[in-house]
Amino acid sequence: MKAVSRQIARALSQLGPRFLPFADAATRDLPLGRLLRLSLFQLSVGMSIVLLTGTLNRVMIVELGLSAALVALMVALPVLFAPFRVLIGHRSDTHRSALGWRRVPYIWIGTLMQFGGLAFMPFALLLMSTGGEMGPEWAGPAAAALAFFLTGAGLHTTQTAGLALATDLAPEDKRPRVVALLYTMLLVGMLISALTLGALLIDFSEMKLIQVIQGAAVVTFLVNCLALWKQEARNPARTSKNAPRQPFKEAWRNYMSQSHAMRFLVVVGLGTAGFQMQDILLEPYGGEILGLSVSATTTLTALLAGGTLASLAFAAWWLSRGGNPYRLSALGALIGIGAFTAVILAAPMDSALLFRIGATCIGFGTGFFAVGTLIAAMSRENGGQSGIALGAWGAVQATALGLGIILGGVIRDIVNAMTSRELLGPSLTGPEIGYAVVYHIEIVLLFATLIAIGPLVRSKGVSREQSSSRFGMADFPG
Image (tube, rainbow, N blue to C red):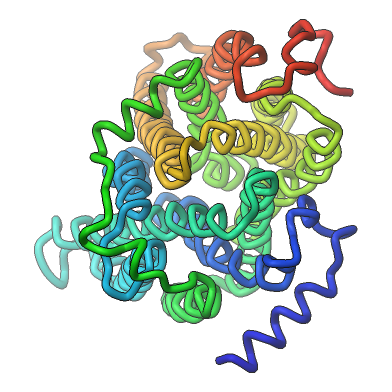
């Protein structure tokens, strides 16, 4: 393990800062190789996200013929665990352990849940595909729901504790850029996973899908173990039972007492929902409306991740020159409005190219918004409580994502049921109408995000030079 770890670290470090956004986060005590090895847990998280919100939702809706509302409910089940990210972050801040670890136990527990959910998922899909022949009809959906929940809860736990560990290891002035580098690695994981899954599933079959999912479970376990190897130093005095512990209520009250804390969380929620309601609809939209294959729609996730990854290069340039993270988030919302407009127009124009351009721009907008709010969240870290700061950001983001996914699927089904009965008029009867309504709602949410984010430019999280400038539509970078 040690030799493999050293070789991977050396290979990763040879990429050099020129090719990695936020690579200047490395220091002498936290070299780039070690930092990139730690970030490998984000690769497993990205792979799980691609499976849950990309490949599996398309298969269940199109190949298995399940309703979008049921699939949306399954994909969004991890939202039930999302609010606990704040508690997980706080518990990892104040963990009691004779071994002297704070973050490692939570990353390990999250890894086991991810592995268990992915390992169990193929059998749940087999049971669901039989239509009740191998047991009661409710058994398949119930088993799939359990698998989705375990995988989602695992990735939430792993990501929260992992980001907090990276924050602990980095110097204070480098912490925002370290976390941003980890977000970059999440996108790399999504991009690699989407391309790999798309290539493996060109000749789609149920057996091949089962092999892919079980392989992902094994890769998750191995990658996370490698990421954790000798990262957190043991300090029994810090995790002693006699060490003072701040109660969760007090820690949360201190966090919320910061300037514009509630407005910031509202912005995160609105913007995340605005970008993510399409999460389970974009691939079915490409398959049902534009006639794209399973492989072609799976690569849409690669376009999304690739667009987001490319946006980080600009984000690195902008923030390294004192750019305002809130303006960066607002720019992302503005790009998202144009991207969803392109996706809507792809159906009447029957243009797969316009659809792919829109999907890529959704990735650009998502990258700007997510990195901007993530760096702003890190500026709200108080007294070494990085876990609760990241937990609050992650909890609101994941909750908004889950609720957005549920609403997106339900709204599409309701609208399509109405159009099939011509309740919306004879001109609105096609299957694309349900998708278009969801995309229009997302545009409205992104406009609401732009309205809410304005006052944050003058908050404590930005520099005096930045806060002295006016914020308007004409002031966006570029």
